[in-house]
Image 1 (cartoon, helix red, strand yellow):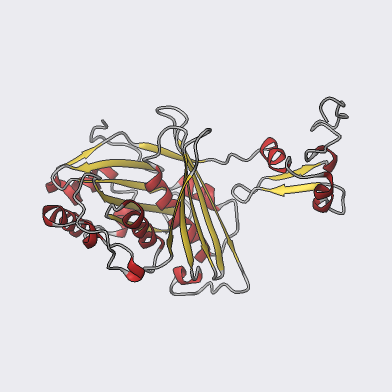
Image 2 (cartoon, helix red, strand yellow):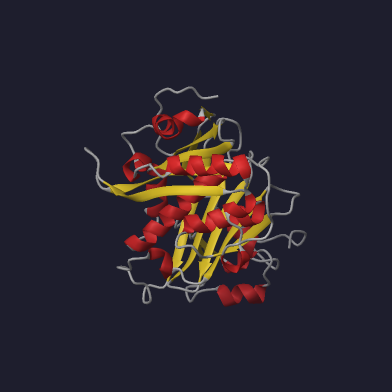
Amino acid sequence: MTSFTDIVWDDTVLPFQLDRADVRGRIARLDGVLEDVLRQHDYPALVEGLVAEVALLTALIGQTMKLRWKLSLQVRGKGPVRILATDYYAPAEEGAPARLRAWASYDAERLNENAADPFAEIGEGYLAVLIDQGEGTLPYQGMTPLDGGSLAHCAETYFAQSEQLPTRFQLAFGRSTEPGQGEHWRAGGVMLQMMPASPVAAREGSGEGGLLRHSDILSGAADEDWTRANVLLDTVEEMELTGPSVGLTNLLVRLFNEEEPRIFDAQKVEFGCTCSEDRVRTSLSIYSAKDIRHMTTAEGTVTADCQFCGAHYVFDPLSLGFEAVKNPDGSPKEADDA
């Protein structure tokens, strides 16, 4: 367990439990990792905000992933903002940082950069949650429609519908100016969730389209505990969430002191991309020589760009696909290797 001591909380997720309310949760604050995610691209401010929101959600949800698991969130819509995608790589070993990456695809001609409601720029669509537990397992995928006015509300609906766990997110993000530093992105948030052992009162949803709400799941003392924890969370201010003047442990005590908060080991998060030349070659290994020729540019090369980190790869087309006649280093393939 982590003690209530002074810790540098930027790019950190702190898990906790409210023993009196039978509620668990996480507090996260992203600073440098969010800057690293966004500096890879020249997004409009509206798109940057949506990327910041989905990255923060991913960090809060991803903290529960076991070692070497991967969590992905994908938001796909029919509006100008077509795709928001994130990957959270759980630590490879105890004590190591988790890695986070994110990107967005949007139609610049259709995008209203001054829209009062950024969420509306995504339009009709869905939020998908994917969990990859590693080699030899089948990835899990759950989906929920986009509604409720925010990505945070969509994530709450996902947990209520897919896992029947009442869940609440309170997020804040934006550009910050601090003494001695230039303007940069910061984000902070709290996630509350009832413990899985809480009693289930109903299976039929009273929300739009039959979706579950927390009132469909909880009853009696559990409902009272959940309501009380949410009332306390409603008192949090945006500046408290994003920091940096208020530490996460101090914020936890201010919000939930009467609920007997208990904290656990904090998880550091850093920007990390898994793209590589070998991975791109592997993804192209299923294509024939004819397919590769269709991918070849006028300059006689095949190129690939990583959407997450912006890495640019250039290949000799004769070294790609299952009919390749050259090795990656340019040497001829031996007959036994072809």
